[in-house]
Image (cartoon, one colour):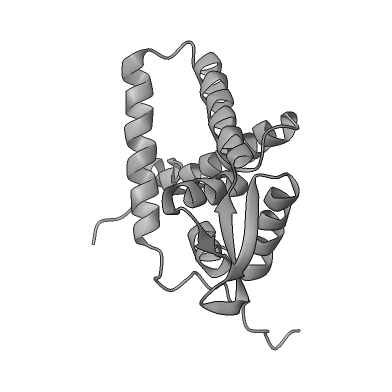
Length: 167
């Protein structure tokens, strides 16, 4: 086994750096949503996009697509219904379940918000040339695919250390 030299130990952990960078990116994207009252959250964008693609969805399907539990999905959908971006009806196959639909206002809002985000990114990345933008797109797309592929695998469980005899 090869010994680790001090230069290797001093090198930062690229995966930890990536984790920190992704957290920062997520916060910045959330801040973009809160900076404009007409802009909805990323989670709500995903919900509307799901409704656009599927034509409608049950709350359980939306929660699964959003990667959250039913109560979080319900709160997000309640906001979208209140804003007139989605409507809900009882599921004809199961009267206990709700079916959600994208409204015309929701479709227009989704299109407008996407356009605002693209304009914001275009302005923000004005110093990037086309090749840099494409490289960033490729990296983010590949990363999202790799992260999505882990879905359904056991989640990280952080177990506190066992108490020592001193405590």
